Length: 133
Image 1 (tube, rainbow, N blue to C red):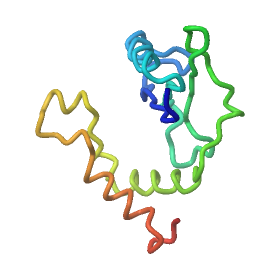
Image 2 (cartoon, rainbow, N blue to C red):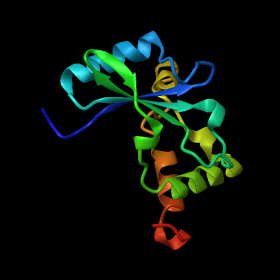
Image 3 (cartoon, rainbow, N blue to C red):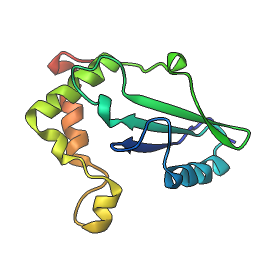
């Protein structure tokens, strides 16, 4: 269909990284109907720490109408160290509290789920003026 590869993002807080929720799977299936290369990307909340050196992600890909866990050794993230450093700075400054997910927006439509303030802060932290590329 297209080279664009959408993903469904799900944060794991009290769920096991090897078990996407039924809701996540249903949404991922709908996305995969439209985009052949869609993936399901989950963040493992138990590994979300500035000190954790490995990306806290779990990725699933669709094969034969099932979501299969992708081998973590085959996933490459560009600029992981920079991303980790920026996340650490945001945690230290409290800027991570600016994050608004879509569910929060549905509860209070004045909350900006596009996260423009947060995106601006990330852009500032990742700019060459701050020693980043």
